[in-house]
Every structure is written in C-alpha cells, then in structure tokens.
Image (cartoon, rainbow, N blue to C red):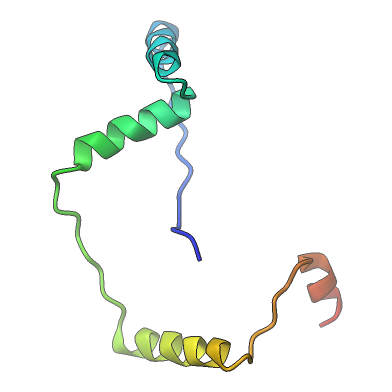
Length: 86
C-alpha cells in the first residue's frame, strides 16, 4: 500500500515557469518533480503533525488487517467487472 497523495495545480507567470524549467532541466527533472523537491527541502526540518485514528477507526482497521492476513480479502483487477458482479 503506497503513500496517499494529492495533486496540486500551480499557476506561474511565463518567465518564472521558464526559470523553473531551466532549473529542472539541470537535474533531469520535470517541472513537477523539481517543485516537489523544493517543497520537500523546505519542510525537511519542520515537525509535521502526527494524526491518530479514533479508537473506533483503529478497531475497524485492525479487524480489516486481520481479515486480510487470514485470506478473507479478494484482489480486484477490474473495477467495472467487480461492480458488474454485485
């Protein structure tokens, strides 16, 4: 299971975008990757908040994990096929 992500749209003036493209190109990155690295570098030393699940949510998650480990889950390769079978 991967890390949850959120897509962000950023609007830049043409001149700033050109600068970002040039800087990204120096490192072989896309502008998106370059901006992501800038943000990561900016927050590197920041203590990010840690959020805990509610006891109810934690219980549900643990039960789901146990069920998965016991083989009670099913891998779905085709979402349309899955919903069609319901």
